[in-house]
Structure formats: structure tokens, C-alpha cells
Length: 185
Image (cartoon, rainbow, N blue to C red; front, side, top):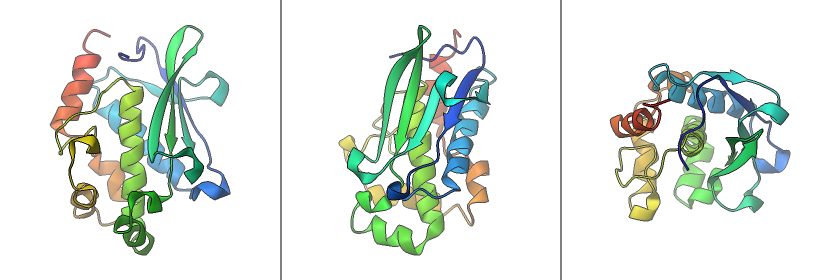
């Protein structure tokens, strides 16, 4: 699919979720922090700005369980340029009987899961592909791996939700993939 055109600022829009999505008002901030993590890691190649939904090339939607997957990215064209819609399902029960109950008891774990899902799907929006490296946020569980351990390693570093904005969550492999995609932009 390739990178987005980064020759000018990339506009983004983050929706509120519907009540049946288990969206929480702070989820919009988690999505914004995920965008900021990618922007910081781009060595000045990505410049992101909020904008109206109709003209935003990146759009984040919080969707209900009926959408199936926990996260998904769908490309679209806007005025001849590739854009991307990211769909995040903040209902952590979709992740199984071990993670669902834990995230209901631990609000920070729930926020880590929503944040990392935004980070992963936005990676696809920027053009990154899945990896087989468990340390990457772009890791695909199609390669196996313990999903509880994946989120747990972040939980061990986070005391409260604001720590997510500082942690970033991207590995050296994620940043290298981003750098390679945007090296000629």
C-alpha cells in the first residue's frame, strides 16, 4: 500500500464512539497520543493536524462489537490521495476470558489496550505492515504469541494513564519500518 503523501500536513479526525461501543471520553485522547507517537518517531517527516471529518486523511472511529475484529484499517481515496479510516473496538471483552475481566478491574490496562490498538492500526494507516517480532507494536498474533504477555509488558511500565503519552510504545523495529517508508518523502 505504501506511505501516505507527507509532502504537506496530514489532517486527522477522531470520532466519539457510540454508547454500544464501550467508548469512554478519554479514548479520543489515547488516539491522539498514538498519532503523536508516530509523528515524534518520524524524524520530522510526518506533520499531523486535526481537521474536519470530511477532509481528514486519517480518521479514527470507535466502533461496537458488531464490527468483528478488535482493530482494523481501511484505506480510501480523498481528492486522489490515499487516506485511511481506523476502526477501534474499545470493548476489551473481545480479547478473551483472561484479558476482559482483568481490564474491567484495571482501568489502566484497558487504556493500554485501546492505546496500543490505536497505535497498531495507525501504523497500518501510515503504510506499515505486520511483523513477526513480538517486541513490535506492528506484531501480528497470526505468528502466535501470548496476547496477555504482550499487553502485560506495557502494564508493568505504566503507573497511570498519562504515562502512555510519554512511553510511546514503538519499538526500534517499528521506527525503522516507518523511517524506511518515509525516507524519500
